[in-house]
Length: 472
Ligand code: BYC
Ligand code: FE
Ligand code: FE
Picture 1 (tube, rainbow, N blue to C red):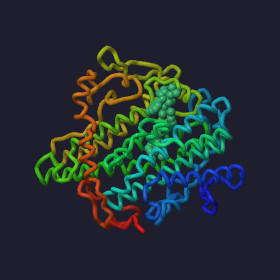
Picture 2 (cartoon, rainbow, N blue to C red; picture 1 turned 90 degrees about the vertical axis):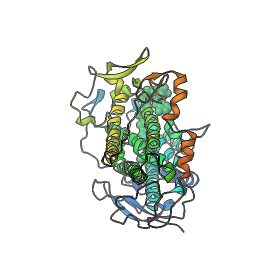
Picture 3 (cartoon, helix red, strand yellow; picture 1 turned 45 degrees about the vertical axis):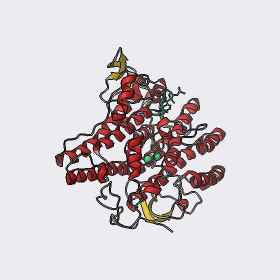
Picture 4 (cartoon, rainbow, N blue to C red; picture 1 turned 135 degrees about the vertical axis):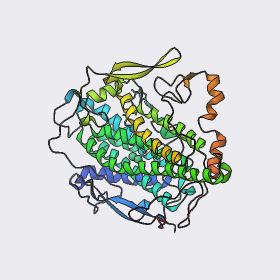
């Protein structure tokens, strides 16, 4: 099963040729996808040849093949992770029963909703990043952007496959809708808020791949625990691709920090804007913005939806099988934030109802690790500045903090104070104009923009200044 059949119109490792109806339905969706890619995928890129990796095998080792490819000719396909024989449902009311190979009828609507929400984010991110190719800081970075974009396109294929294969007519309709909602569209926006925010500059792109793709990591891990085996298997393979997206984010922000440190040292000032660098205070504002909108992606602190998904065995916790408890949580508790008077307090609630909050906390810890590594770079250059994640109450739109204003330390503040101080915390129009002013494209082999350090190493054994993208 692990080897992918590339002789088919739609590459796959699910024996698609044996199911002619499904094959025909997906082959009918394929031109709509390509049309969408042409209209809303990476702008102006259809003739570029790019050093891209393509999946050839779904095992953990050696799954990728690298070659110069034009993106419209990328072989998007359907790749499920290996099947675990006799897999059991690991949590919830059906714990210990055989994992489902078909959709459990009673949970059909919930399962479809989870798959649609997951699937919707994938094309959304491609739409959000559509214009970035025009302002790349180097060919290396341009390749990274396009690699991320084609893989997000493949993640859409992953969810569309599930909809077509397991949800009949309404699945096919949902697959069509995936290409009809668009990021930022007033009438038909993407489902989750953070996927309607344009990604207009490369600092935002690196923040996106660091923070927002990391939501992907946590959500996909939770869905990989699913009792619905095809969903679990597809998420397991998507996670191997996701790791690279987060590498792009962490190393990207790291290289911006590295360059800023160089300029601070060279000019003996933190105020490096006039020297063409992004000052650390500006980087902090971008962190505040992206981290806070990503916290919203985890839903409400107390959620009956999440409790139901868990009970039903559809969506688990992060690394569910490594947690040492009964995996049913009927008698367990968890601490969630609440507003009491003018303060944020932490109070005990049922563990089942607070699955979202637990995942958000796991996510926060994971985000902190990269911030610590960036701070180490700053500290070893003996610069007195520390980057940090804002408090969870800061700049939120979902959950208990949606109705209050808070500063970056989590103190509840008045509307007036928020309006007076917000410019110190999140990017202003001037900040954005400044960062955008640095975004002049660098496409010469071996050259890099002045606001970012070069990568430590290249891709797949190539030099950092290999010609990763050829324009024709
Ligand atoms: N925006 O009970 P609650 C990725 C709604 S990223 C708008 O807490 P639930 C990627 C909610 O729908 C991973 N609406 O909700 C990254 C509900 O509506 P109803 C994406 C929101 O269901 C980068 C109501 O508020 N995957 O892969 O527990 C590049 C009550 O909320 C939002 C997934 O998200 C929001 N942020 O939690 C490319 C996994 N939050 O019922 C790709 C699948 C909540 O009142 N999705 N609402 O109509 C889920 O598991 C859940 O849908 C959520 C929401 C965790 C997102
Ligand atoms: Fe994805
Ligand atoms: Fe991703």
